[in-house]
Amino acid sequence: MTSTQARHTRRAVLQAAVDANARCHDADLDLFFRGDGEQHTTWQARRTEALRLCAGCPVRAACEELALRDGEGRADRDDMVRGGRTGPGLAAACAAQAVRLASAVEADRDTEGRQLDQLTVELRATATADTDRTVQGRRVPPAQVQAQQNLRVRTLAAQIRQIRTARRARAGWEVAA
View 1 (tube, rainbow, N blue to C red):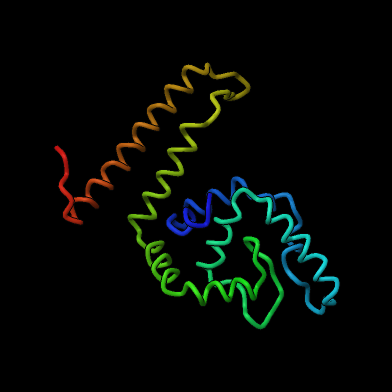
View 2 (cartoon, rainbow, N blue to C red):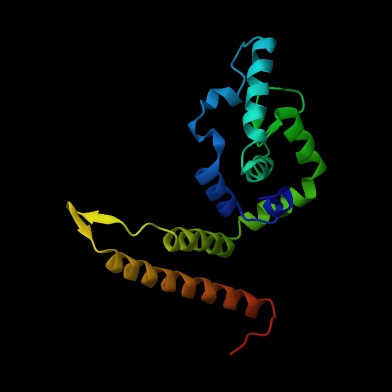
């Protein structure tokens, strides 16, 4: 996901991408935050390591966008790394993008939009889920699991279509019959 894509993506989708693909999931999260009273030289080494980990992360842009929307970082404190930026870097980006971020945060509050995002994430997860299941120690036939998944995918797609159609109608778009 590029920075431009992240800017136009809703919070739920960004969070799902970070939760599923962030390189830091297996890392010690203390790596990303300066400890109370920690020497500057010690923090610099850990900060450099954290920035290196972020640099190769496939969802760095999504993580950065979430940090910006959360208003993370302070211009006067170098005490964290998130989304490949330090605290002062995040603060500067927040200030430079204040209008865009306010709009993004407001859009994230859109309940219907949030529901669309959640349904979309669930649809993707359901559609790509493994069909290898066991119940009470017995293997469920993959065809049966697939049939259940297909039904759930159709139900989710119908819910998404219904919300999108209603939103388009309210926005004055012509709705095809």
